[in-house]
Image (tube, rainbow, N blue to C red; front, side, top):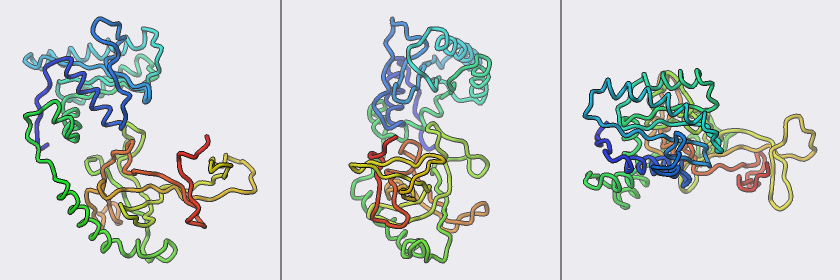
Length: 322
């Protein structure tokens, strides 16, 4: 890591940081404080009803012996899971995060899983130490400016960003010409490419789902370019068109005389493409495109559906009827 941020020493400020961080990470505004000191918080400091996520913040005095803090955190995990299960919560929880100013250690992750199994929890128990927290904070300039105002950050100017994107567009137009200059059926090369989260370190050993149940690298078929980026085919479905522009997916084993076979298409903006390797590597000999996975755990700024046979016949996600 290039930079190091000092752990926040004020308990309330640490809770504020965690609240802001999760709102940015989850692209929402629903993470908020769950009561305040003096209230019965039932093992919860921050909560989101949209994502059913609860967070318990543990600001630690780091001047003490690490072994003492570590033992204390093990006790905290047991206690907070117990509180969350025993106090008749009226809210649904899918994930309980323990966020702390203490450093990461694999023992905490293993212990969280062990406690989850021992208590037969119906929610995930996850540990975020300061290493994880600061890494994520460093991805959000607004958090650095708010909580670390003296931290010097080299902010890229609008002109520099524009020129960088223009240069990337020129490279893409040249390097991906064998694909984007031809229709799918007339291409000489396979259109499947590997989309990778640029800061993922698991490739090629394992590919576990992230907090949004999405994956940090996966194959998709390059469809075409558009004025702001590239479009990829990420699935094929059958849908039924309804009145007033509405539509729904064709149900399993449903008999319907009129339906459309559609591509599911994801749009990746040039601003989210960090770089690419046109040749791939020894594990996947195809273009690898390194992206920022900032849209609910994916790189796609928009997903829509397009008729396989008639490209002008398109269906928007907001018009879907469940």
